[in-house]
Length: 327
Image 1 (tube, helix red, strand yellow):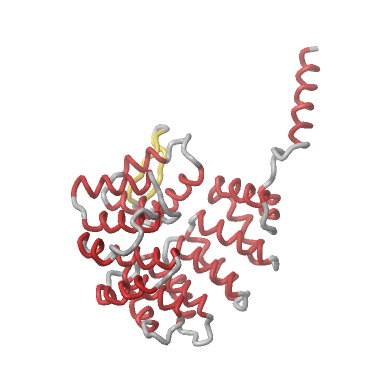
Image 2 (image 1 turned 180 degrees about the horizontal axis):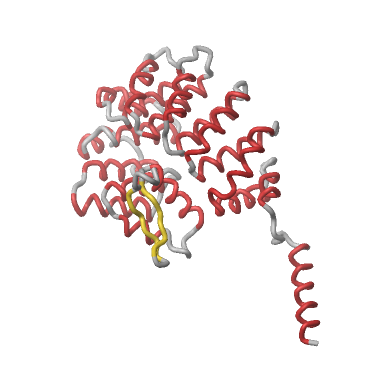
């Protein structure tokens, strides 16, 4: 009798699950759901991301065969966020196949900026920047690849687009890239553009760049005309203070950037700064089982990009430098 009751209860639970949005979805179902922009596709993306690298073997065949550009773009973003270096060749092959779809190529460049850098991704980006027919949007995103990886090889490409006759979006991307790569010769151009530009998003790009090539006093003086209460300004100012701080103050700012992100990129920067200041325990705290999945995945990705590993040792999360075997 007890077994019959248990069986009936299990059937009831199963029927409830099937009749609601909480039914178990397979990896294939979730990848299929990425074919349209919707609440369901967002939920599917989160489920896939939470499973990490185990979903990649299911993603690659779809990446190679799908002609649904929405699905390809959402898959590309997912693959970039998972953060496995083995994904680079798959993304490049797909981008070359669909090289006439500018937005898709841009999305691939964004993903390559998230993935650990290798020679294949570098050569692909250089090929785009060497193509005189490349769209301004692709050029801008290609320059962003060098900024994300803080790769000084991008300086020679960014300097090509410093002229006033260059597309404005590309010129801003070039100024930002050069500033991130610590080319202080652009300081005057950055502050000049800051006084001219109107949109907050462009101001923030220039502000973050300027934060990397200015002292605290220079940053304050050259940005005195801006709204200092805005999140754009506060985010850039914290980066400037971090760059110029030492000792305990530098450690404190690094923790604050991750704990209280003001802009989407702050989590990435916060992780990088905590690794730079050897505050591994702070990262380990954010990787605890009860932490938000989105934050945990971003941390894991940035840890890997910065040549560290996340390991489980005696049920404890550890952030450690990569060994030769894991690189």
